[in-house]
Length: 234
Image 1 (cartoon, rainbow, N blue to C red):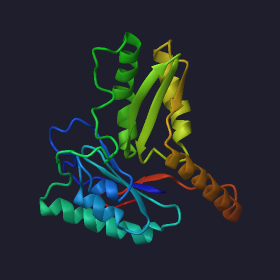
Image 2 (tube, rainbow, N blue to C red):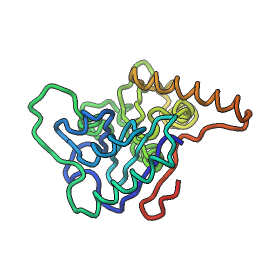
Image 3 (cartoon, rainbow, N blue to C red):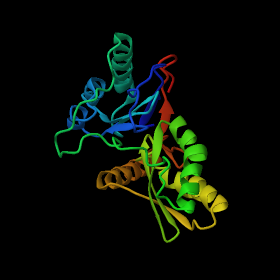
Image 4 (cartoon, rainbow, N blue to C red):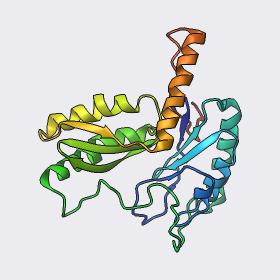
């Protein structure tokens, strides 16, 4: 597994923030406005950690394929515990006077109601919000609505789901089938990928193939687990 979800029993995102999540994909993003995070900066400083994702009440940490959890997890666990018990804010809110991009997901919730939406888009958003998002958040991620055009719904997966090998299966077998069942105008779902995500998924596929060759067809790398701060079980 390349991602672990931690439940600190503590609110992670600041009260009143408009976005349902924040995602830090580089050390620079952890200190950039408008939502710098000392905890994310410390986590990204751990050798092998590639991204940090904050939901409202959970934290997902993703590592590189060749970084063993045996080395990464104790440091992650310690830093999150220290941050929560210190009482200091996990995420700070500062004025953004720069045009440089900071964290992913700092904008308003893409699934929120918009009076300008068509009836079909409104139905799609409601299904994503009430039926799809809870399941994805349970796995340590989130989902963004990127548009609806010519029957195709464009979506972007975040957090633990963004580069896992099962993301396409999740979209096609789960989300697509549900949307097509309830909204007849929907003809399919398209996953929006950044260049880095495409590279990461190709690297994962190569790593998985190598694993199968070493240990046999039954050896398939798991992509997401959960590490509660109460039990710290993967």
